[in-house]
Image 1 (spheres, rainbow, N blue to C red):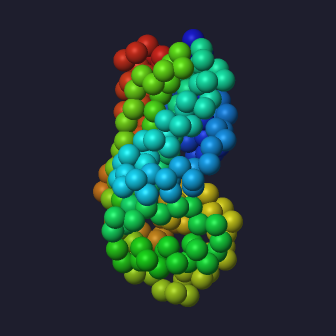
Image 2 (image 1 turned 90 degrees about the vertical axis):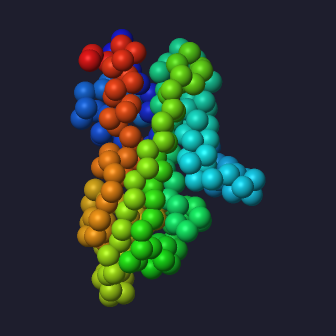
Length: 199
């Protein structure tokens, strides 16, 4: 890759996935008011897929405007359950409420990526995964929150699948990387096709 990929995200797992795949990437989190954007989109009747896509593009555009010659990747993940979009929990009580709602049920994670080059969007993708939570006890939930807060506050739904959050689930249908917030395989395919990475 002749130039590094700028990841417009502060997500450690996304940067780790890119680096592990041999992509020269640096993280430069975009400062955007995600909650205000999300609420405005919900008020306008936007669906989860559009919300994830708009948030990913907003982050990529913010960095691309400052570095127009850079290759910039914006990402966002949205949790959809019964037509409601969940945000990252701000308190342990919010995380408890979200996890109780999801317990024993199936929800969707939508992970969007938008790639900018020359300050213009050149590629976008939204991956979807279906996850089913097991019917865990309140006692386990309380202990889980005590062990994992505040780390899980960075995750929509209040779980980190790459950590103890995996114990909350009975089934996952879809791509593992997409579950972690980065549809890595489609991204690598596109980067290789365009010659941004060796393929």
